[in-house]
Amino acid sequence: MNKILFSAVSKKFVMALAGLFLLLFLPVHLGINLMLLRSDPEPFNTAAHFMATFPLVKVVEILLILAIMTHITYGLIIQVHNWLSRPVRYAVRNKSDTSAFSRFMIWTGGSVLIFLVIHFFNFYFIKLGIVEGDPENFYAIAYQLFAVRGYAILYWVCFLILGFHLYHALQSAFQTLGWSNEFWKPVIRVISLIYSIVIPMGFAIIPLIIRFFK
Image (cartoon, rainbow, N blue to C red; front, side):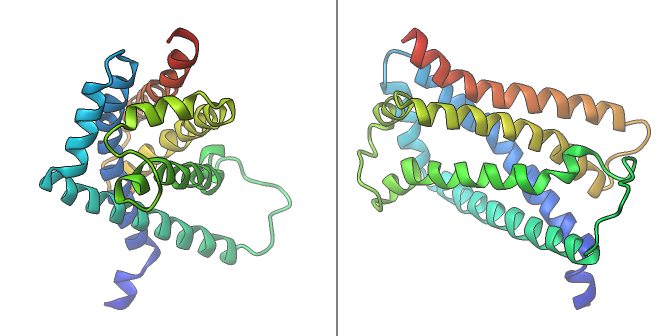
């Protein structure tokens, strides 16, 4: 039983479920962030306050944190296992075995994790009172951060990297869960491409508009 629970296949299955749950949250987060483009800070601050205080959202928040921790932990375990199972690199890489996206998933995921930690410090930890700041005016905090060129560039780069991560992650998740076959594979590939472009671009365009058009 333990072998089944802790097998590589079961880890990939749990990681895929956690990843898909996170992917469902990204469009919601983007919809709220797009309110930053309005001149009136009230809609964004109201939405942020609702997300921070509504009981059901708090439950979803806990599930999101658990999903993030599960996805990262299992991803690292699987990657380390793969490295240990192939201690010596092949002299000639068989390109048909895996795509470039798959080979660099651990690195793109790591880059997204670094940004996520920074994001937590700038927003989530302020809400918890761990970091100093006004939790009732995240609109002003976001504008202050995007005014810093280094932060804006980091934001753009991280969402570009996220796009590459999402493109492979969606296809991999569907395949792991057994929802991908010869008929659906091209459809899933198109959906993955659209999602991996639209969502990161939606986030990345926000600081761009704020810096140059606000």
